[in-house]
Image: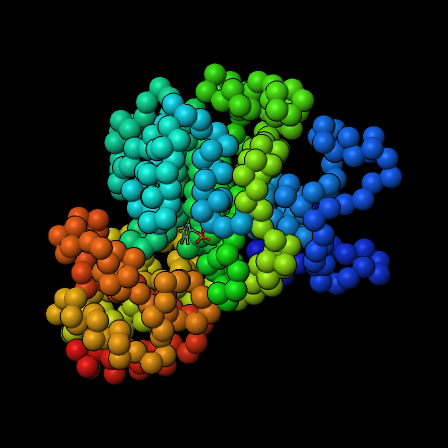
Length: 428
Ligand SMILES: *Cc1c(COP(=O)(O)O)cnc(C)c1O
């Protein structure tokens, strides 16, 4: 694959190069199964001796074309689609950690990921230590244990909008002989390619900007292909010793550093858990990708205009947006996200919870939704929705103040978003 094409071209043309007379658009292989002439031909696929398709729970050509576009966008060596971002987070950890293992994780992560790790995966015997995204190298070091198998963080955290020092987290993970896994959902590969800063595994909820139209739930995992499993044999027996459930294959030797992670995740986790994307949804995801680079520019310029407007409004107490001058993460955003961060910002109106409620009820252009990163602007009041069961004190303890409004700027005209906010703020 030509890896030297620019991001804008890969968004449009990556992953699929039709030959003479073939369909111009990615075909939807709406088939659960694939036909073979002899049992021997099929046997080779089961033994992973030949590559090809036999059952869509494991692999499907449409899904693979779309995964390979995202792989090229991120600069990785292999990729797979999953049925959701949650499945991608789960697989990215469970592919390398077993019961009795431990993972170091930034505390600034999506709430669903936090629950998956801290509650559900804990029941499976995997322990997580959560550390501040602003940890120093010594503080990250201190979280490691002999059984630590990975470090996990988010490029831009949802909903706290902190930017992670990717280089520092990757370097520290490597010093301890483990891979660094990053959730790049909010930045997208258009604004940040974490592999260039040392990340080993990149995952996304494609449900957000990659789809971008609120159409399909999905996830993706991309392997950079740089982590040397055999150099850390004792930590990663799953990669470096024979898999008896797959004819004694040793993933790291048979598929090398570039193929081991995704092949193992497909052969073991997709086989057993079955969290596959549907080819129809992969097609929608690809339509989203075709305009991702154009949309991100508008999401980011709208968000910056809205953030600047809100921070100049005397009825607004505070604004959080990494690309806004004076933001706690401004310097990190300039380093890792120089062309823009994302379309999501958070703010707090003066007057607390009541003021937030009044303001949101008065909005006409921006809708109240449990969603972000959509072409249509939307907003959420966590204290009344995702965090509704918590008291004001509990809210503050988890960094969500009672007046916090999460505002996801779509790709409409920024003037309409600002005029709408102006009239709604007037009703406080
Ligand atoms: C939404 C989201 C997820 C979960 O993805 P789903 O597609 O909803 O399963 C994971 N990480 C981040 C940063 C998200 O915003």
